[in-house]
Image (cartoon, rainbow, N blue to C red):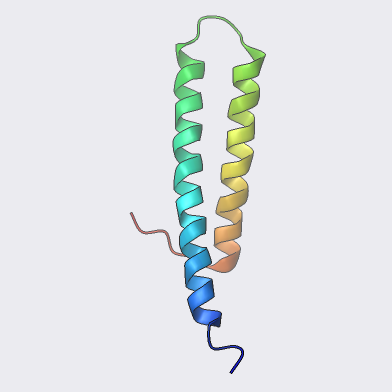
Length: 72
């Protein structure tokens, strides 16, 4: 009675996790492109890239633990 929505909730949160992974991947790619285009050594851009990297890899690790399949 109380646990009927368990599969539905897992599927819903897995979809949100996949969306977050895709968003953070785009952010990571954008910061890498910006860093490559800069001629000067900018610590702020490097910090943004490292933050985006750590968030993306954390979400990816969480998806692996949950055994979520990411379809392209």
